[in-house]
Structure formats: C-alpha cells, structure tokens
Amino acid sequence: MFKCGYLSHGMYVSFGLKGDVLPCCYASKNTPSGKKYKTTNILNGPLVTKLRKQALENKVPDICDGCMKKEEITGFSPRLSNYYFNDNTVKEVISEEDVRYIQVKLSNVCNFQCTICSAYDSHLIGKEEGHSNPLQLIDDDLYNELKEKLPKMSNLQLIIFSGGETFYNSKKLIDLLDYIPDTVKTVAMHTNGSLFNKPILDRLNEFKKTVLSFSFDGSGRFFEYQRRNGKWNIAFDNLKRIKENYSKIFLQCNNTITNTTLINLPDFIKEMQPYFSEMNIHFIEHPEYYQINTVKPEVLKEIKSKINDNMIIKNIDYALNNPASDDSVKHFWKRVLYLNNKNHNIENFIPEIKEIIR
Image (tube, rainbow, N blue to C red; front, top):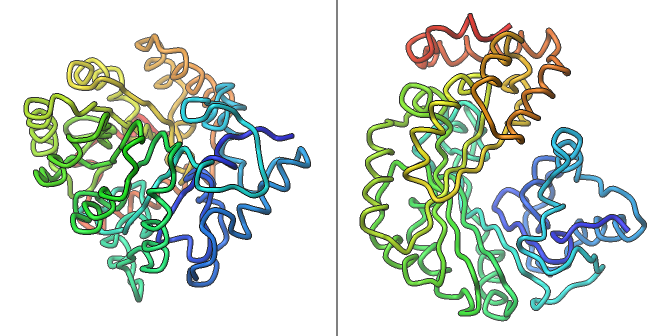
C-alpha cells in the first residue's frame, strides 16, 4: 500500500477545485479542473476516492508527484510526516471522525501580485491578465457543507486558512471559526503581513494554539520584488506589533526560496530568527523558471558555504547536480521582461540579478 496520512485524514477545501475536495494542497497543482461544485460528499468525492483506491493498490496516486519530487531531493516530503496523523493508513471511505487536517482557501482576494503566484492566488493577477472573472470566492454550497460537517470532526488536529490574503476574508472567516470543534489542537492562518486585523487576531487568540504563518521570502528589497505591491516596513512592523500584543499566537515564517531571493537567505535567517518561533524554508517547484537551478554554480556554492542547515544544503546540491535547461533560463528572462513592462523592474530591486542567473 502507498502510505499517505492525507489520503484518509486530510482535506483541502477551495473555491478553485470546482467539483471535488482533495486530501491536501500539494496535490492541487496537478488537479484537472472540473464542473462547478455540487453538494455531494466532501469527504468521499470521486477524485479522492480514486486516489485512495490507487494507494490501496500500492500505486502512486495520479496527482502525488509533488511529494515524490521532494523525496527525491531531500528524502522527506509532507506525506512522510506523521505530525498531523496517528498513522498513514489509507481507507477508501472515511467519516468526519477520520479527518485530522483541513486547509480552507476561501477566496483569491489579495492586495499583492507576487511574482511566483498566479490568478488562482490573487485576483489582481487575474485582472491584470484579462481574466473574465478574476475574483474567485468559495462556492456557497461547499462552504455550507463544510460548516455542517466541521463540528462533527472530533479528531481534528489542525485547520489552516489560506488565500489570497486571509485577513481580507473577515466575515466568512470569523463565521467559520465558530464552527471549529473545541477539541481542535491547532488553528493556523497564512498572511502576507500587510494587514493588522484586530477582530480576527482577537478571535484567533482564543484557541488552544494558533499559528500565524507569514509569507516572508526575504527582507527589504528581496521581499518587495517577490511580494509585488508589498512594503517591507509595513509587513515587518505588523509582525513586531503582533509579537508584542498577542503572546499566545505562535509566529511562523513560511519562506519560499527562488532564484531572486536565494542570495538574501543567509542574512534573512539571521535577521528573522529572533521574531519567529519556527522558520520553514521551502524551495519553489512551480513555476520551474524560478527554481534555484537557474542560478550560476559559483553563486550556489557561495550561498552553500554560508549555510549550516542540511535540508537547504541538499536542495543547493540538487540544483548544482541538475542545472536548469536553457529554455527554463530563457523563460525566466522573458518573465522578468514582462514584469519590467508592468512597472516592476527587477533592477530597481536586485541590480545584481545578471550576476546571479545563468
């Protein structure tokens, strides 16, 4: 049997799935779009049931290649973690009591247009790209079914809220928080740090444990390039303000490393460690042209010499041994030109970029 706790114990609930609920967000990048969601069974939809059957037949499920790639590089992946689950068993049909992990994506409303994101993550990107319906909200039927089933999930360990920018979803978010069972161990939320939403923070402060995860990929100019529209001084001030006023909230850094932020990583870790209880460093997978294997080998080796974290070193070694194709590098520069033409000129933020990328 292919082992993965998410398959029988996890749920990823999002406006963007349009027809099914997945076991985790890692699989969502490879999910074919479906029809508009209809209230059927968020626990045992057709797609997730298919994935469970494949796992029970000891096959790698169709949309699980993200974890396989992580395991190839570092020997570890989300599916191998038992943090949220008591076991990695897989069942074809589950009940509310089986659910231990949920991630909820309420909308794509966001004030940022991050270079690494798509219209799925920010309605402003969709608007800029000319999408006919850039603003995406969770389907009412799906939302109401989640509210109906959530109080019955007595073994829920963790619920995560993501976006878009989650602090923009105040009404639905605060409403949904009231349906979370008292037995939940951790409530978590992602934020870009741009907003200080006191009503939400006050409500989060009432749970046994709340994790507020800041999407900080770098500091200063590196943050402001990758987190387009963001202002580092505002985000950093909000972090400090929350740390000072909400001592119960566990502060986490969620850092997505790309070829434009890598050179800032050693300094960033030193600068941010006093403010965060935990720092999660991730290396981007999509879009591929932002991966660090587009960086010049001598730059990779220099960064490696300044790092003492084994996971980071493994990712740098993998990039050194698996350089990006010329097409991927060309695609990066094409994307840079596109953003330059949108008044987001990379040389205003990272003037040394030509010395970094192959």
